[in-house]
Every structure is written in C-alpha cells, then in structure tokens.
Length: 258
Ligand SMILES: Nc1ncnc2c1ncn2[C@@H]1O[C@H](COP(=O)(O)OP(=O)(O)OP(=O)(O)O)[C@@H](O)[C@H]1O
Image (tube, rainbow, N blue to C red; front, side, top):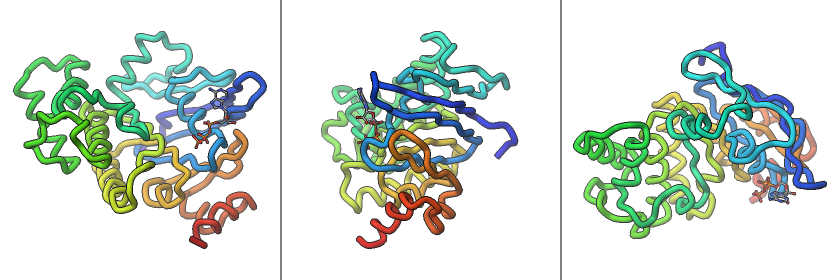
C-alpha cells in the first residue's frame, strides 16, 4: 500500500426527503485495501455505496479521488463525461443481480470484450484473446464464449460479471452483495475467486454485505452501519473478534449462534 489514499470521503450525507439514507460519513480508502460496509437491511449501506460511486448524488459532502495523474479530483464536481470515463476505465461495479451488470442477450465473450472496446481497443483478435483469458480466470470454460449469459447458472453469471469488470484493469471495484442470492457452496467458490483476484491484482474494493462471513473473508477493514451512521469502524479481525459497540456485539453473536 502507498501512503496516499485512493479515496477521501468527507462528511457525506444523503437524505430522501426527511428520511436519512446515510449521515456524516467520513473515511479514507487506501490502494490495495478492501473495505466492507456491513449492517442490517435499511442501515444505509447501498445508499453510501451509490453515493461514493456517484450513482447517486449526496445531499452534502465530498469524495476526492486520486487520479492516475496524481491529482485529487472531487467526484461531485466532475462533469458527466469525466465520471463516465472513470467508470469505464478506473472502476468496476459488481451488482448483486448479475443481470444488472451484464448484457443478457449478447455472448459471454462480447460482454467482456465490449468493455475493452469502450476504452479504445479495436483489434478483434486481441479482444477475443483477452476475453478467453478472462473467462478462464473466472473459471468459465472458453468453449462457452459464444453462449449468452442467460444460458449460465447464477454463479457463472456472477463470475462473468466479475470478468467484465476486471478486464480493463480497474483500480477500484465497488461490490453490492456480490454473493447474495447464491447457494452456499456457490458462494464459497465465488468468494475464493474474488479474494484471489483482488490479491493478485492489488485492487482496492468497497464491498457492501450483510454477511459478516463475507466481510471476514474478503476485507481488511470494516465499517458497521446503523440508521445511516457508521457506528463502528476498524480492522475486520478486531471488529469481529472484539466488537466494541453493543449493536456490533449483537450482530456478531447472532451469527455465532447459527
Ligand atoms: N429511493 C429511496 N427513496 C426513499 N427512501 C429510500 C430510498 N432508498 C433508500 N431509502 C431509505 O434509506 C434508508 C437506507 O436504505 P439503503 O437501501 O441504503 O439501506 P441498506 O442497508 O442498503 O439496505 P438493504 O440491505 O436492504 O439494501 C432506508 O431507510 C431506506 O428506506
């Protein structure tokens, strides 16, 4: 990790009318770091993730991003084209439902390859070779390259979505419940795969999950949200092994009892 944060989130709040989405959120994310945002349903995890990834404009606050040229830019002051460029080149976003992140009616190869075309690659042979390479990296047989994702199982679709996101070499990946809705055995395999890829590529990631086991396996640090606020924040092992807040203690003990 370097000594310069990749992301500086400062006092972000989002209100939906009178309702609090998330409130007074500040933290930094470091290169190569995986941060989990955990909390029960309605605690504000998705709102926060969407604010940081600029899919949603916060009511107040700023998020500074360390650009490849070394400068910091406030994401909310960028224009739409600049933000779209970042999303295409520097970021990935893995949705809980793969159908939200894939084009279901085009082939697996095209799903991966079109991200490369979006950043300017034009050489068909190279694009296809990268697509095959990435399918194999996410454990999808290369001979499925011309199949559409609708012919894939849920786990395969999620792995394809990951390949589509990582093929362009992003520095930061947002993941919203990446293993939600999958069978337990499929989840375990996917988590292993994600952990390996994140380590190998030195990616930074922000992962929203209500599953503390996912946070334990993937993240270095975690933030616990409740009613829109971060109520506890620390190294993942510390928070899970020695939770300080009563609410976190309750969350941890509830999974230990299962
Ligand atoms: N579009 C919206 N309009 C109004 N209120 C919203 C909207 N989206 C979220 N909220 C409210 O904001 C709060 C935080 O919701 P959010 O979806 O961010 O929580 P979450 O922790 O991601 O929950 P889940 O795990 O169920 O997705 C909740 O009270 C929710 O009802």
